[in-house]
Image (cartoon, rainbow, N blue to C red; front, side, top):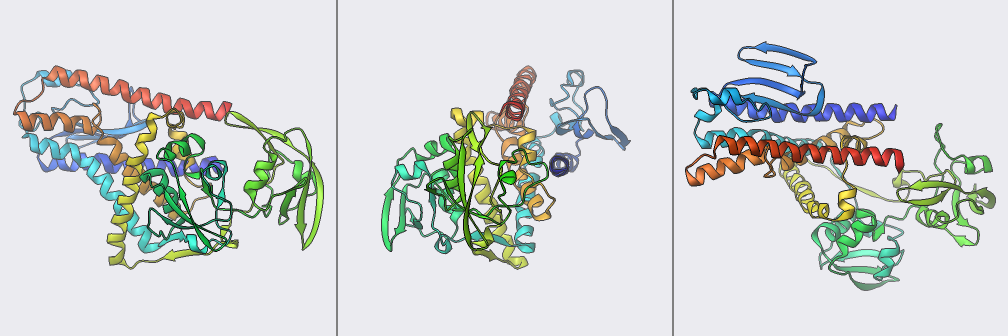
Length: 451
């Protein structure tokens, strides 16, 4: 059921974004009186799920959900219609229009996606507001992992400032280090301020380890959550550990936080351990056999329990609310932050860890919630809309950005590229795109079956 909910959200979101993207091309083409022969949601090699001719345009739904397209008369695009290009140019064709008009048509889809992302963020802030965790109100401070401890951080430290700036969101500290390469951190420890200088390549060390969750995280006291019906490992349940128990130790090691507990079990697969817990104020312990689980490339120990995921039990979440007019600049600022963060993440694609983490449709669908929450659905849709705009404007042949590059060349030099150059560039672009799609979705398949 969870898979169905995620898949439905993903398909609905993707369909909306593709349809509006292509509508941007369609509307600008019609504005300049360019004939649009086809408008398709999803690709339709060999056959279509549905199609209907309305006026001069065939509207349809394809069966291959890798995108969508509009077939514009007199343009070298996905259709690779070479026969049409051999005929004399007609006044309603794309190639007959001035370069500046053709440029606007090619930017139509990207512009719609970008503005849509900003608009959705505005409406989210207006309807639901925004939540943030203030570092100053984190009662347990931070949880420093192995990498954080290596550079002087300690569990319990309270975040004060980053590069001299006091930030009001826990996420901003992590993104500031990972994406903006800010390395001067001030923390409060035992009532005293301590300066932590991180190395210049800290963001690459974080990506190599655990991405945005490396260095430090939010400490989670370990209160046992309900057991799901389809639980894989029943060791803890069969040993008598109940939902609501507070886990505090493994053998003779204190584990006040879930992170401590996970670390304590990491290399104990196949062993029997003593788990200490509080139940109704009384300390007790039970012996549990640790099962073996595969996590990526490593084997870890598990007993089949997880903490409750309601962080409001321990953390006070600040809610920022916006009126309609206030949500407009706030939505633009939020959208700019999302776009900037995504652009900055591109540098990690050139690392072995970044390449291995590329994901396809399965990874994107998995980003949607297991239950349908409209706020989360629209947040993901806005994020994907901005990502789609950015990816489409990249100067890769077959993408909008590739067409834009050739049009700018024509506008600067006064000479249009030869038709053969455009045809070969389109083919090269398709090879690049489908190679990336195959690789990314291959990663998904590999992770699903082998990791």
